[in-house]
Image 1 (cartoon, rainbow, N blue to C red):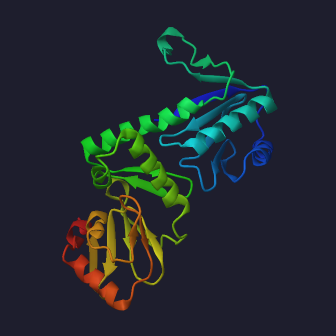
Image 2 (cartoon, rainbow, N blue to C red):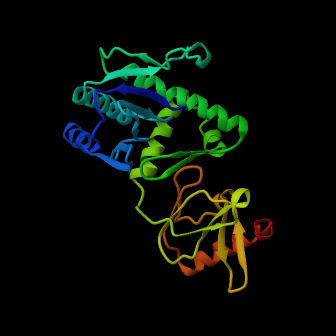
Length: 285
């Protein structure tokens, strides 16, 4: 569900130069050079998904916006497109919806840049379209959807959406966008702690061991582990953990939990509750 645009330039873009220009244009913009040909930009404290800028080949730049991009992302994209076009005498293109490889159609269609790439109407309608699609997928398949965001992953699932079923699509869009921003920028910057990987290929499992040694963020894993003693391990799922959360732990989306240290009594109570639903035998399969 990405929205792709392309810019044909007279010369290869210089990411360092582009980064300096954008820093002067927009407040709080950050970036991560992920490879020689890919740079990821986002607005700190505001972006929901960020923007990928990549050099697909010499003289061809791809601008990618992913689903649940928000106002900050689309405004950032407008500035990136404007800067690239101005710096490198670029021409803007979009994917040709009528493209047919067998008919030798042109893959890209020229897009006159007479106004910002994303208009005010686009910035309002695109997130609402994303909400409708994601809600339908999660509700019908009864499977959570994970979004990879600037700082942290965000999870939307059937339980969360069912609690918001009385909201209009516009209201739900605002709520989900706010959740993304909250999870990424407003919760404590705790570490993820002891995350383990077991097995390979289709048998690969990601495990989280909760030890109550440090404050941590709990994400979505195949199993969450507690060590009852030197010989016994308890394994439960995120869904089970959601039903036994200590009062001081804050669940901020379908699965992300802000988990500060517990007292010894609270932690022992949590382990006892987890043991009632122990799925360690399933983990060993």
